[in-house]
Length: 165
Image (cartoon, rainbow, N blue to C red; front, side, top):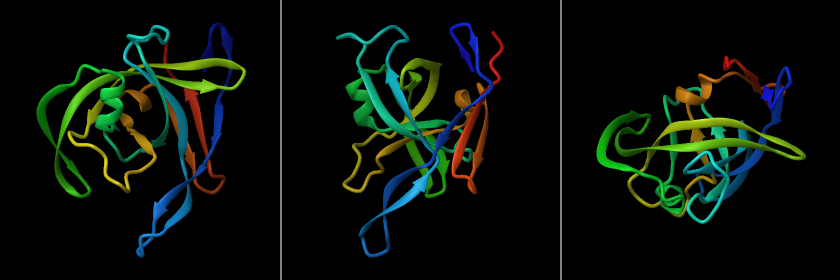
C-alpha cells in the first residue's frame, strides 16, 4: 500500500460477524469477509456538498461490479444514470441504475487508503426490512487496484497494492 510516501507490504483485515436470517426468520451471526469503507461523491474532503457515509463492504470475488443501495446514493447525492440496465444475478435478471462513487478505506490512527472512483450499480428501489447491513465491493475497479486474498481458514482479507503510480 502506498501511504503518502511510506511503503507497506500489505494490510490485513479480520472477518466481521454480521447478522443473517436462518430458515425460521431468526437473526444469526456469521463471520464474513467485510471491511469498513468511506463513500463520498467526490475525492475532496467531506463538506455540505460532499457528504460522507461509512459502511461495511463485503469483498465479493464473484461480483463483477460493486453494488450500493438507493438510500446511500440518495444520501450522497450521487449522479445516478437512471436508464435501467439489466444484469444477471444469482436470483435472475435484475434492473439497476449506474453511478460512480469515491471510496476510501479508513484506518485507526493512520491515513486512509484511497481507492478512488469506482463504478457501482444501484438497486432502483429502497432496501427491504431484511436488507443486509453492508454493500458489495465487486471485482471492477476494486480488484484491479489490489491483489486480494480471502483466507477462509484464517478468516482474513489481505490487500496488497498493485496500483502503479
